[in-house]
Image 1 (cartoon, rainbow, N blue to C red):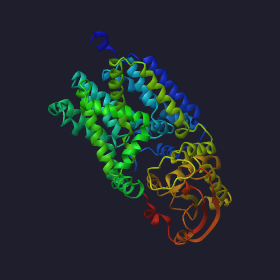
Image 2 (spheres, rainbow, N blue to C red; image 1 turned 45 degrees about the horizontal axis):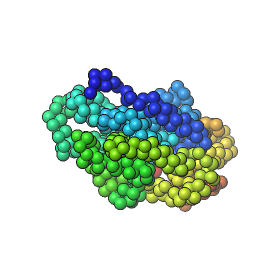
Image 3 (cartoon, helix red, strand yellow; image 1 turned 60 degrees about the vertical axis):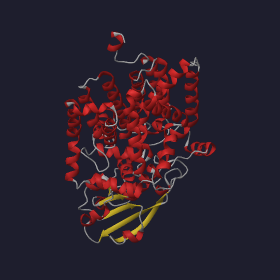
Image 4 (tube, rainbow, N blue to C red; image 1 turned 135 degrees about the horizontal axis):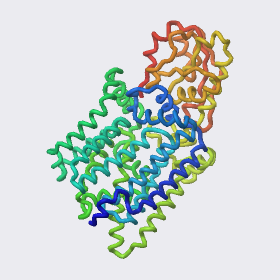
Length: 513
């Protein structure tokens, strides 16, 4: 290896990788405003307005990033979609770096970037703001550092690895699966030598230390996150079993990409060139088994695929070159792009809701929600962008029909964080108060609950509301064609005269799930 090659930081395909990355950002942002704000985005904005060291269902890093971003650029639909699009672009570039670190040449780097470009799940997850965009990027960075450590035996890189791991844990705790998977897989390879290295353990200490604020927050809030995980596993996540979990991986990464990443796993285990990195394949297998057996959502595993695609592409391109079949490399790239072109309207809002629904029926593809919920005309990642404006408008109509004095002691109560976030986001145009909700972190916020005597309640049953209020009347109903079915047909109730102070019954509405 030449000295110039050793000193090079960026891959020799950088210009191509930047081009692919920019195309990705362009497509994401040009379609971003076609559909409204996504359910989870409302919640993230609410969390960013209530900064803390922790939240019931996630650590705080993505929230602080959003808080800083929106303080500068605002929280418009396009503004909050920029960061996930850029995160996806960085992932594509990083995949090129991963491929080069595994010994892939320029065509391999480009093909690997195209493979990541063509992962359907990433188009979905990078089309709206959430911690998942950063999670995928952090997994790829951790794998890249692991490969660099194997290549250079630079022990001090474990410190950087620890810092990235700590950031990952403070973004999404599932990074812990990766950390534990790497630790366990090392035991089965020659990389176990690092167990005796002080920098390896220093990196681990740094990661744990960075995670401590979230642990302290949980200690102060009755370990809310553990309750959330337990409830989600038991009552929310659909039990699809190991076989169903495996089938979902084929769809999430794309059918053609399956051939590449599966080849990557095999090559890491058995090929002469890639076997030094066999720890990566073992990490994937260990995490796969754990997630498949623990009733986890299938998409929890998708951050593992960039490094597997890079491995597969390195093996495939070298095989094709040895067999004098180099022409097949661009053919594979074209086939990946064509297959993604067919799937693109199914994963980002290219078409209208009506056209998307018809298109999904035409191609016979309606993704599962991964939860115990009925799907409507659109898959959940589309459906959860509809119905919120209608709901807010109905609630505003009732609220603004109240007299000025009653408004001072009135609030809007909703059933979940999506409804609460929508009221808070769109309700600014109607001068609505902050929504009340018992779902996840909204339970902890409970703004102005002590003096309330009137509630506008979205959803629920009248008989349940009569147990709490002397006066209950249904005043409207919310209909939305393309929302999730459980967000349409909701009754709007006007309730007055609570039978006891609402603060005395607040604990009964807690819902961590």
